[in-house]
Each structure stands twice: as C-alpha cells, then as structure tokens.
Length: 220
Length: 247
Image 1 (cartoon, rainbow over the protein chains, first blue to last red):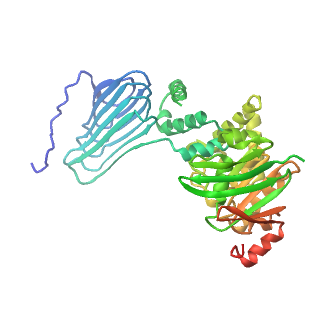
Image 2: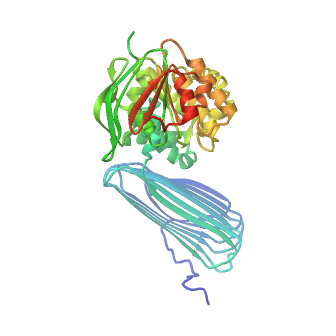
Image 3: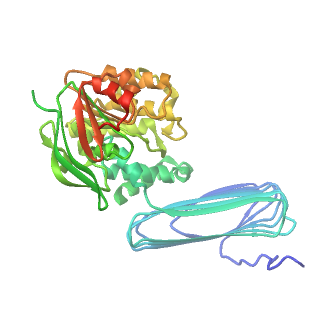
C-alpha cells in the first residue's frame, strides 16, 4: 500500500460507542471510556474534568468518518494527593475536509502521577484536514510526576496539523511581581493557576468553574 | 521628624557574589532621593533587597521602614506597610486582567488594615480615576497584565498601580529607561502629583532624563556596591557633564 504502518480498519471495540450524526456535547468527569464515530457534517464537543482525590483514566477514541465533521476535546485536571490520572486519546481522521482541536491543561500536586498519551492519525487521502492537539501541565511539587506524549501520524499530504506539550512550574517572577503589589503568595498562586486553566474552564458551566476555583484554592 | 527609611550598613549577595558592600541612606518624609550609578553598580540589587525579592541574601545591616524592621517582612507585608517599586522590567501575567489583579491587590491591602474590600462599583470608579490620572485608556482594564504592552505602556501601568496603592515610599527602578519624551512626561507628572510632605520617592537611574522633570532633594552616587558621593540636585549636573568616572 505504501503507507507505512497505517492500519485502516476501526480496531476499537469499546463498551461505549457513540455515533455522532449532528451535534453532540458532553462533559466527562472523573474518567470515562468512549468511542465516538463522527459522521459527515456532525460536530462533537467533549470536556473532560478531573478534581483532586481520586484516580481516573480517560480512554477516548474518535473516528472521524464523514467530511465536514468537527471535533473539539477539552480537558482540565487537578491532582493533589497520590492519585494516578491518565489520558489516552486517539483522534483518527479517516476522511478529508474535517477538523479537530484538542486542548488539555492540568496542574499536578502532591505525589500524583499524570500521563497524557495523545495520537492524531490522519489517513491516506484524508486531505485538507486540520488537526491540533495541545497538552500543558504545571507541576506544583517535587513528588508529582507528569508524562506527556503527543504523537502525530500523518499519511496524507495536504493537511494542517500541530501538536505541543509543556510541563512547567508556576513562575516565581510572576509571584514576586504580584506579592510586591500586596497580593499574598497563596493568592498569587491561585490567580496563576486559574489563569492557566481558564482556556478550558471557560468551556464549563459556572457551577463547574466554581468547583475548580475552590479546589485550586485548596492546592495553593 | 521620624525617618521614613533608614538603611544602615546594608550588605547583600546573590549566590556567593557580594553586590552591596555597605549602604547607608536615610530618607525623610517628603524627600525625593535619586540613586545614580553606572551599570553593574548594584542599583537594581538595592531595589530588589528593599522589596524582598527572593534570590538575594542580606549578609549584614539593617533597614527600618517607618521604624519597623523591613527585612523581616515578606514582599506582600512590605507592600501593605506602604512600600512600592515600579519595576525596571514589569512582568507579564497572561490570563490575569488588570482589573482582577488590582482588585485582588487592593483587597489584600484593605484586609491588612482590617477593612472590607471596596464594593465593586466603588472599586471600578476608583480604578477609572487612576487610569485617567496616568492617561491610560479605559480598555486597558480588561487587558492581561502587561501582555503585549509597549515599553511605555508597561511603565505607565506601573505608575497607575502606584497611584492605586498610594504608597508612602515609591522606588522607581529605571522607570525612565526606554521611554520617549511624552511617556517620560506622563510618568513624571504622575510622580510629581503623588509627592506630598509625608511620602518619599527613590529614583534609581543611570541617567538624568527623569530628574529633569522630578527634581530630587538628595542625590546618591552608587558605584561598585557602595555609595561614593551624596549631595543635592547639583550632583546631577556634575554627572551629566563628567559621567561616573570621577567618583
């Protein structure tokens, strides 16, 4: 076939398969296993959330099988204890003229472990697609661990794809600037963490945002 | 009259490198002091130590601010006590708007004085006044702190924050660097308008530009980590004509 390791068949056999024919939105909290099959012209919008205290895993596979489909996946996660959190995301563009965007942001504290595995697979002949994936992390403590592994497998040539991943700390320079204006250190950290998560939190209902803000305060 | 700031024998290092080698300086209420010196003299270290920036170690000396031990206070406590520094390089804080930044700062100041936060409408009115005072456009209230600001806009934002927090002692660390004459005038007008018989200002600079607009009462020349000369405003002319070499 000349397309390297490309595996053309849908191999996933997950318990929960959702066929998306027009618009489908959902929020997945504290772990999920999903297989979405997104058909022509349909749109899928999923927000994943993780709050501290409980281990969770997200196993999400998206198959875009129709032209004109669009997919947005967001994730916000906070860990502060000894929990394990993992994301395993496969975004499969099987046809052309479709787009996907993924943004996952999280803050890991305590002795927690976070693992993010993200793959974008663009099938041969799936031309004129756009696929983006970003995963950004902040590590709060010495003992917290974050591993992020974004992967792109592109078998078509007329595509716009990008991925990016970062793991960093809260900027002490920002903290000092805020503290020099009288903002207490813990409050400065809260502001930093909320602003870091805000591109994803803005996707949540107000009540969901409030819960995150409360949990952020408990980590600061 | 009680001293506003009293620095005695201040020595400070970064890592194992000593940068300040014994500084003495006394500022009375109402005075404007200029600290001038060439690059590497220790000017920024002095402002960093006074504001409590981590990474600097004070190895000797004392600093009393309004009679209290400044060096034992956290950076936020120094701010609550009435100390302010206009940063040479204001920090960008993505995702935090000027409104929420200042609201949080002001609420913390009020809390330190045992006061409730201002009502939102009163806060916004106060902020609007101060923005107008430094010539900042109202839309800046929604901008993220310093993100995408020009050099002049950043410095103006510093003076705006100074006006909001109404400090007793303001340190302007190289506030004049990178400013064109118009921006410089705005900064100077802001500083002059905030001068009062109770308040003090330290202007840290390596050239005299800002001092043409804000006349200092006392000028110190800092070189090699020590104050090598102290005089009146006439020292500015001497430095302008002869540079720092003669000190």
